[in-house]
Length: 227
Ligand code: ATP
Ligand code: MG
Image 1 (cartoon, protein in one colour):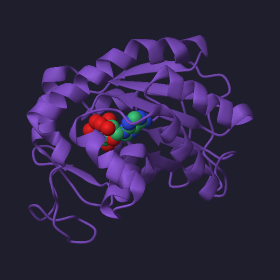
Image 2 (cartoon, protein in one colour):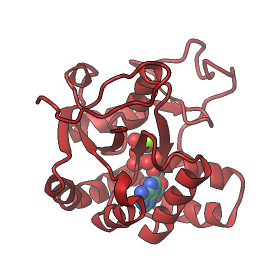
Image 3 (tube, protein in one colour):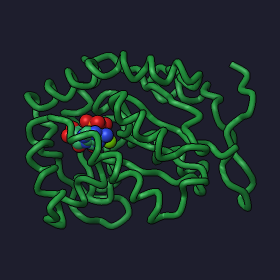
Image 4 (cartoon, protein in one colour):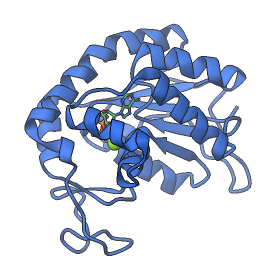
């Protein structure tokens, strides 16, 4: 069964960083980050981008229907609905989770991993976070770029996200913790929920909800995970 993974975690909990690491181990895993998709729309000044800009600046969530449609379009465009995929930043409300389930039908999410990081650690991480327009993220303390403030791959300048200021971060954290319990219950009821300690990278090493497959095959989910 292909791995269909949702990463759940507060802003700055390491979803993007973990995604990059997983992709290094499993290059065939398809990843979608709704935050990165929205930032691309903003950069291209599309109608969705204009709308997204207003919401993101305020630290507010975009409408559920719009987000579900966006992810559905992306899955279709890349033709990966029946392949393995990782979703970062979606779904993040029970209604988004329901919408996703309706759209995926037989290809439903089979693993949800919550990255559990204490809020004080998060605030420190976000203050040190710099990124590249590709979505690559750096942390000045523990994951610095090779050349200060330059992207490792392209050499282009890095920037800080406009929504990474303390006031907006506070709002985003509140929203996250408001939605966490209901979405957790939703996926617990589907029997696919797991939590890992995300404070250090070592928590991830013990996470056994997936396994690698030969380069020729798609990434597979354990049929019967041994937890
Ligand atoms: P991180 O800081 O680790 O990237 P985040 O969840 O705060 O986590 P993004 O996932 O990049 O940040 O999302 C940035 C913003 O885009 C959110 O604050 C929200 O306004 C909007 N957004 C992204 N995904 C969704 C979604 N599934 N539903 C509604 N709004 C979303
Ligand atoms: Mg992110």
